[in-house]
Amino acid sequence: MTKANITQYDSTPSNNADINDINIAENCPASNINNAIRELMAHLKNVDTGSQALTALSVAGSVTATTSLKTPLIEFTDGDNALTIADGGNVTANADFTVSGALKVSDGGSIGSASDTDAMAISSGGVVTFSQTPVGTFISEADMFRLTATQSGGTNADITANLERVDDASFSKIGTGMTNSSGVFSFPSTGLYYVIYIAMIRSTIDANSMFTAHVSTDSGGSYDDVGIANGGEGSASESSTSVSNHFFVNVTNTSTFRVKFATTSMASGSFLQGDTNQNYTTFTFIKLGESQ
Image 1 (cartoon, rainbow, N blue to C red):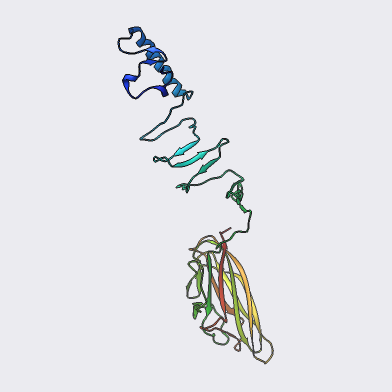
Image 2 (image 1 turned 90 degrees about the vertical axis):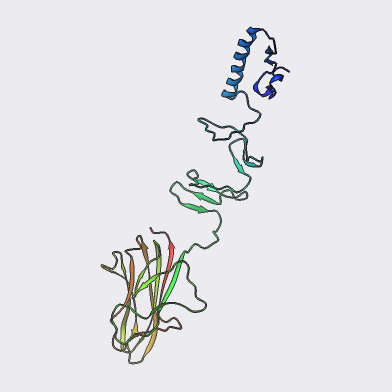
């Protein structure tokens, strides 16, 4: 059989008696050797340019392609199909696909499933749009503290004591939770936090008992007044009322952002109520998302 290209060469040397009909058998004319070498070089060049494909290629080291590497199938060494490349460039992984670095899609590209190819669309600015309502846990921090004892009447000061994380049997927090240091709360991670505080105030002849909230961005060097919850009773009758307020804190640095609470304008007949077994006066912290 004539050896018209490299795929027809034989691994048994004696079976290679010609190159493209040029006789190289024993006792062939000496002039055939020059012609055979030239023909062999042409065969190798065809492999080099890609006009002649190889039957199989086994590489012990790495393969570097300076232009393109063309193949419809990439297999593992035992023959298992790993990646299939279809006409048009679609790539199918036949098992789990693991990326050790970043996985990037084109601007406006999508990530999806076989039945919903655009489940997640990612804009050039990184905005992610879901084609369906997401299911899962997206609030990474949620915590609640309470005042454990009622303050003395007429107390007008920062709340620095008798604070505990709620510990009822049904309670649970999400994430690390807030850190309380003598009434000054610090945050576990950066993000946009929703803070809700509720006060139960018992008053007599004091219509302006105030419960205030304050935020610091400089480790407590200064505080911004961010909320006032106002309650009380203007008549001689004693009453207990629950008042509340809420605010956002855009925490960009966990080492400098702080929140504290205080009572102001509390007359001697006004008390901020607390209890260690149930919620009277509470402080709730929920991380809504990343810092803005």
